[in-house]
Amino acid sequence: MIHLEIGEPDFDTPRHIKDAAARALLDEGMTHYTAAEGIRPLREAIAADVRRWKGIEAVPDQVVVTPGAKPIMFYAMLALIDDGDEVIYPNPGFPIYESMARYVGGTAVPAPLREENDFRMDVAEVESLVTDRTRLIIFNSPHNPTGSTLSPDEIREIARIAVEHDLVVLADEIYGRLQYEGELLSIATLPGMAERTITLDGFSKTFAMTGWRLGYGIVPEWLLTSYSRLVINSVSCTNAFAQAGAIAALTGPQDEPNAFRTEFIARRSLIVDGLNAIDGVTCVMPHGAFYAFPNVSSFGRSSVEIADHLLYDGGVCGLSGTAFGRFGEGYLRFSYANSQANIRTALERIESSLAKLERTGELATAASLSSR
Image (tube, rainbow, N blue to C red):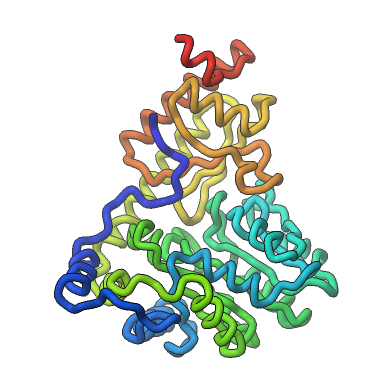
């Protein structure tokens, strides 16, 4: 089985990061509770990093460190959304946006991402979705699952919409350092946006630290009390010695993260060119993250059926586009966080398996596989 479904780097965490966490655990006594918002040295390192990397003029007190980045999303919903309040979010998109909005009693309003628009948010359509119940706009750039990125002009337009309609923005920038073309612009740096933007980021994608569970938010001052109380009442705090590793990630050598990025760019070309060479498949070039989002609608089957066929017949595990929302129908998501050798083998299997589907019009099932 070749795994192209998992949204995590296949690289190991750089050694200097692991060493820093090990010292904190074994030699420095970092085995106790920390401040709910995170240890002060890490919050200082994050504030300095976002100032240098994103241009966000944040102070350490605005940084909230959490076990992974999902709590930053969830706390935003809990703090801001009441029954019937509306949340505009990208669809297809990270499924937690929709599920968390619904969980807290809100109404999740999808902003469709379309291939003809390079899977970017249509900002005019976003504005048309705003009502007197809208409280929050979420966007993710670079984007999961499509790998699209918003242009600076589009981000400026989202900022204009937020200011004119008095809305809060959740800017999911978890893949920010894996943007491969174009200008990186953080919406919190734009006029009037620092006080209405929650910037989400973390360590999992850039530094290959998914299992460390380390995320953070840059939170407006007026929301800090809510975030602090929510941390205390849900997770208490984030792992102490893991936070020491996070400091090393931000302040230590960047050679390995930069090498990860270079390798992702090479894999991106490999998988996109390979998918486009398969009859019946088209794939736009993603501009960030590590996902390809090919169009497989020509086969006349649902995305789930085709994903299952590739799994059981070809031994390639990808995800149906509908795992990311109803506007993902007709597409698959493949993660290219795997070796180039495995990607080449996967492409061969995908081509062979889809050709079989075209000839027979049949889909492999778990039952038919077990009978072979």
